[in-house]
Image (cartoon, rainbow, N blue to C red):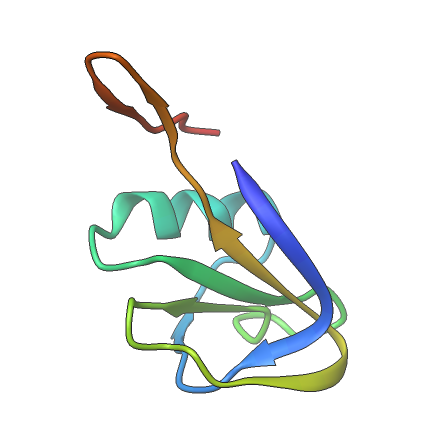
Amino acid sequence: MWVDHVNIQVIGGVKNAADSLRDCQRACLRDPLCKGLDFLASGGTGQKCWLHGPSAVERNPREGITHYDMTCISNDTGTLVVFL
């Protein structure tokens, strides 16, 4: 699951070549250090997706960028991560 923050950018992301939100989310889910991402839908090829680790905390207003925080779903046996 993802919590979106419209028009917010987190400083210090690592650029990823994903060109769709779904692919960007998949890239984040595959990276054990990734805790969130910034996505700029209007960005050019290879300029839409930035992945963020646990140390990325500084958030700034930025028109057109949406930051997504990854959340986990827990149950009695542990934590489930749903792959998109």
